[in-house]
Image (tube, rainbow, N blue to C red; front, side, top):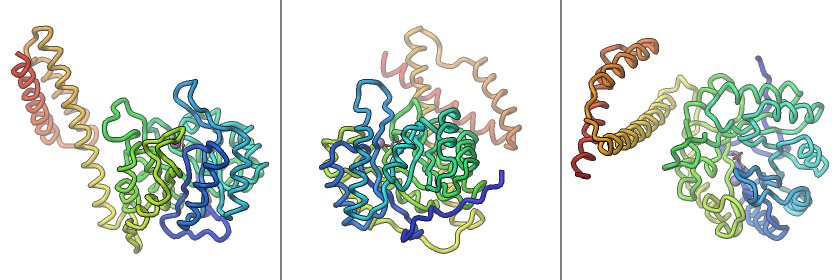
Length: 357
Ligand code: PEP
Ligand code: MN
């Protein structure tokens, strides 16, 4: 579908990279919102975020202050002049947010994954002129993300941006949500005019990952960053491990290296950055595969099974070579790689047999 996306388009807002949205994960109290907003404003940030309705994994946690929080955002807008942004997931949220004069809406990752919910939002946005940022769905499904963009666009919204906030995975070792950079990169290729924000807070889940992830996003030519910042992160009611003070936020933003110059996917340095990102993913996957191999090793040891099971190895080789060929990889190359991986797996399992004997 051909889309005519317009820049986020808030009067007075520079489109220079990075456009920054910052503020607490959740609005907690009027004092917390105002104190955070004043400090963030003092750092030159133009768009303030705060979650009013919070989608929580399990019931019983803090689910947001609700409507009352919109009045606090109204006050932020009035006293600082910053634009204010919040997450909407239902038609009531849209209605209340518009009534309170919220400037930017975003759709959360869990909502993007649900076409019924996105359609409900699209229907309630018909005829409204407001920028809408669409987070990636929790699952790594680019078509689902694009589907949500199209639903909102068809409602007549053309100030659309997207937010890359990483993807859920069972294996939460380094990141809270895996970055899988190739997905937003492919989205950029398919929709070059769509502004892309990175949410390093929800990708990393930890304060120390915010700076490197923000830099990576800038190196990939993303347009903006949405970062969780709280006046007192240690006592935040949600996502406290990933929130930073406005001072730290300012420090991180000042250290960012913004490479300018015209960059397209044909540009060599951009392609090299994509290669870096893919290599990182390959290493992550290899590490994960070895962890699973070790688990299998433990199982084999407990059940008195031999490490090397030739029929299984032959089956793997056969199936993967066919798969690789279908992906235009040479059979020899695939076999060579699988042989190396298999040998390392065997080594890892032998180690387990030895160590635990
Ligand atoms: C948030 O931005 O606070 C949030 C809930 O994000 P996500 O939808 O990415 O989990
Ligand atoms: Mn959060």
